[in-house]
Amino acid sequence: MQGERRPGARELARRAMRAQIADMALDLFLDRGFDQTTVEDICSAAGISRSTFFRYFPSKEDVFAGETSSAVDEILDGLLQRPDDEAPWTALRHSMGPLVEYYASRSERAFRLAALAVATPALATVQRDKQAKFHALITPELARRLGADLDDPTDPRPRALIAGALGCLDAAVAAWIAGNGKQQLGQLLDRAMDAINQPGAN
Image (tube, rainbow, N blue to C red):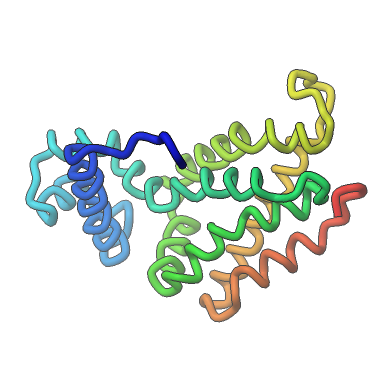
């Protein structure tokens, strides 16, 4: 975007270091399991101290959360670019493309990480936080498209559409995992979302 400040060398180096630590940590999670991997294990693999680790990540869970953290922002960007006259449910499906593409581009690794997240109770908080971010970012744009008052707590439509879309995504990922990643996640998401009859939204 024109006029947007580009990150300086220090910030770029910080991002690269954070990505390197996360990549090593995720490899350990896949090899040993999330619960069986300690912060000390990650530090040893990355050649860093505990204090350095905590400068980049508040907790072990945050390492996992960062794997798809940018996807929610990309979904919002995608939604903002959809035509105003497009049905909100349809616009939501199209805007979820970046997340589906992420999984498709890294199929085996992404599949294993998704399966690990589903099978690890300790990561349930990560999922709840991600869904809360999704709600906070997407609700205002959906409210605008619906002609709803964002400050009206008696109108359930924006939040209902988001909850429905997230439920469809969860169902699609669960089916994807159950099928050992052999089906296309995008097709599973289409099938899940098509199964929901949203009056005025399809």
